Structure formats: structure tokens, C-alpha cells
Length: 302
Image 1 (tube, helix red, strand yellow):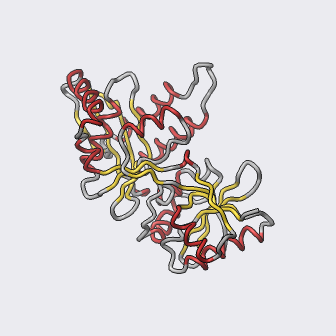
Image 2 (cartoon, one colour):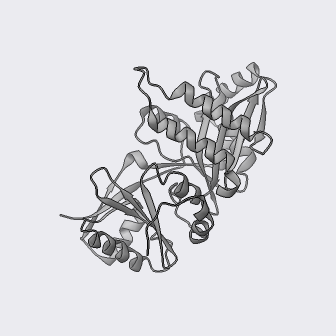
Image 3 (tube, rainbow, N blue to C red):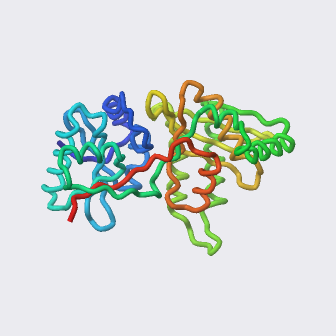
């Protein structure tokens, strides 16, 4: 068994092992596993047809993650992760774990482990039908923003990202970075720069990653882009969404049109977490999620 940083060359094997996944958290997608590996110092290992993630924390301690609920032998997989922590001479820490998985561990080992829910990492999951129609009084404001956009840009169109427009979409992502990667205090936000680089990479390698992309064109140019991939049989996950903030309605319309055109066969849409950012949390809550999927850290008590 060997831990390594995954690359796009590993995507087929990752996808094979993850096939049949029912865990709806955004981290359990092949593209996510590859794209963010270096940014989060994450390695993976294949063990008995299971995938184990290992991330190095700022405290120098490894944290592990795996899919216990879908494993053929979840207890054996959990025990293996415990052994890995012990071999490293470190206390057990498991991240991105769901309440159902903790309850299963509690049945195996009553009173030994505890779970701390991390609200900042909770995933926002919506009904596909609601995001594509934006019906109902609670989403009236979203419809208003789109109506104003349509009045301002009557020639707007939705486009899937293809070979014909991928470089234009990539340029839009880079321009978005130039506009948004500097704080008001003129400090560079390196996380946003990394994300923008990943967006461009994802656009250009979307077929290998298994991604689907969409864009909005208005006044002759691309003003919003988005990318995602299938997560489970009934859930699609949106990884990236970028739009020019000075164009009112750009974000709501790319959200609605992407769901409408690319996700008709799915029941749910996972729009990932808010990472504790107040503005992002307010925006995600405003779309009225059907499920706020809690994830947490599992540790040994004491």
C-alpha cells in the first residue's frame, strides 16, 4: 500500500473505485480528488478496492478520510485507517465524515470515538427542479435579478463548454482572477489564484476529468462559466462558478441555466460548502437548500 499525490493519469482508477458511491459529500468525486490534491497536500492510497485519503495538517498530523458507508467491509476499512494513524505515531483524525458513518463506528466501538461537526464544511444540496425553475415566493428575488439581466442583455445565450469556446472560457476565468485576487488592502489572495488556475486546467481537461461545463454569453462575450461532474446516481456536484460581479444577474442566470441544461437526469445538486465565508454562506442559504449535509472530524475520546 502506497500513498501518493494523484494526477489526471490516475482518474480512471479513482473513478472505478468510486463507482457506486452513495456518499453525497463533494470530496467524494474523482475530479475533486485530483484537482485539489496539491493545494490541500492530499495523498491517496488504494487498499482492497477502497480509496483512502490522507491530508497533512498545519500541526504536522495526518487526517484521513474514506467512504465507510459504501465499503464492502466498513469495519475492516476503519480498522485499517486506525492502524495507519498508529503506525505514523499519531492520534487518529478522520475528516469529511458523515453522521451515519460515526453512528456505525459507535456500534462497532461504543463510547470510544467522538465526532465534531464542522459547520464551515457542510455541503449545500438543492433539488434540481427548484434550481432550474426558481419557483416560489422565497426565490422571487433570484427571478428578479435574472429578469433585469435579460432586459439589459436581450441577446444572451447559454452555451455548453466545448472545443469551440473553451479558450474564450479560460480567458474569462483568468480575467476574473485579475479582478478578484487582490483585497482592498492590496494583498494578494493566493487561494483565489490557485483556484483560478484549477478552473483553467479543468476547462482544458474537462473530458478526462469527466466534467461538464456551461457558459453565458452576453453582448458577444463570455460573462459567466461553471463546471461540475456527477457525484452519485442521483446527485451532480458543481465545483466552480465564476461570473463578472458588476453584471447584475450573471450569477443567478448561470446557476439556473447550467442546472436546466446539464442536470435534467439528476434529483439533487451539491453546490459544496461555504468554508466559513459570510458572504458565500448568505448566498448559498438564499437558494434554500433541501439538505445541509453535515460533515465532521472523528477522533478518539480523551
